[in-house]
Length: 71
Image 1 (tube, rainbow, N blue to C red):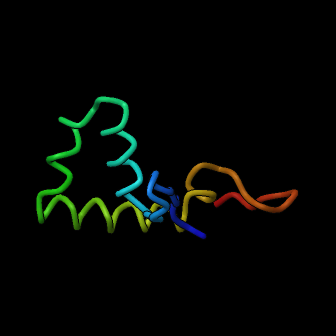
Image 2: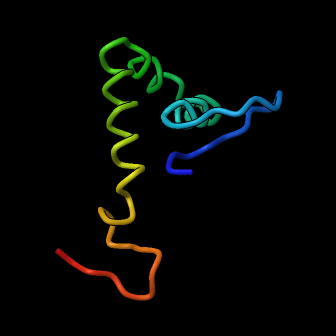
């Protein structure tokens, strides 16, 4: 489970950037969401988030072991 998962009130599961879109809309930040749905921007955000999600532990300095290698 690399990407964030969310569940809508109707039980539907969503993943990735769509979770953040739904969250922002739910808390009144809908105007920030519409640009993320534009074709070129949407694909770039989805791709960028997938790359980040797969590498987030390394990128943020966290790891799943007791010790981590740096560099």
